[in-house]
Image 1 (cartoon, rainbow, N blue to C red):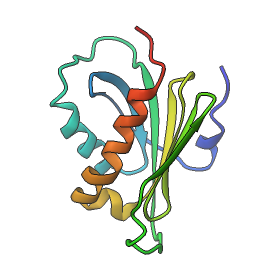
Image 2 (spheres, rainbow, N blue to C red):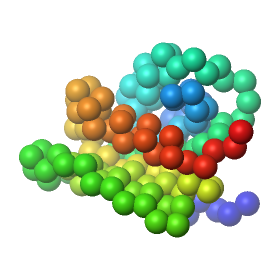
Image 3 (cartoon, rainbow, N blue to C red):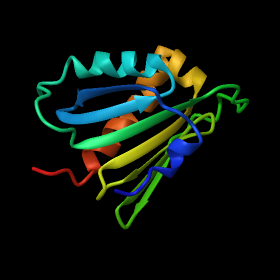
Length: 136
């Protein structure tokens, strides 16, 4: 198994397995509110959690991001199994579609503001999961 080098720099001690848009995902984070917000979305999923997660995702919440909120445009690109979505305030989501793994770095304000989380982060995460080459 390849070591997760990103874990060396930021601990993500909060972890759970959720069904998001009918995909079972193991999510780990350094901010418990992320799991609460994603848990709300998970409860509306028709998929029941019985097996191993189809994908693994880490969410690193960063404090004191001093970028202007006006830069809330969403930009994305993908190439050769890798995908990247940039969301306002310096945040981004990146995934390796073939390895079924992803990571996000987001401003604390994006997580704590429910409207921003639902309008920007959640759709980006669901899109990344939808586009992964998941088994079965």
